[in-house]
Image 1 (cartoon, rainbow, N blue to C red):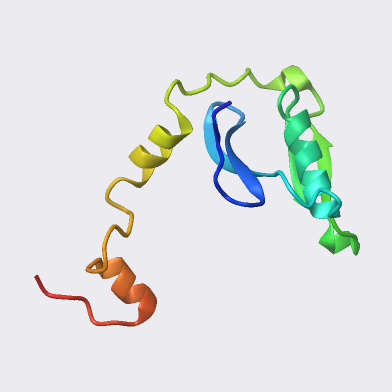
Image 2: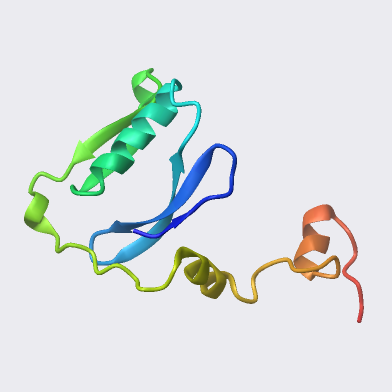
Length: 118
């Protein structure tokens, strides 16, 4: 599992859904007395070896995440993890989609400015 740090309260990890569908997962690293962070971290730790899903408990009138386990842990094949670093995966995924300077049309849309004409 690839890992990237940098934010002040969490790490980012590459996580997997069945059949090698990968996504970035935010893993809390501070404020672990918070029930949301506690249950999120618990789900992330258990997901290292089990197929789990975490969902909000707000509809139950409770805080935190509910952790559900696959009924049959062998129902899905284990993930074939990417060999690229998390930094390379993010770079390739967002290539051409990032705001890289103040002349970006996307930035102009976000701040309600007219796009600059080059």
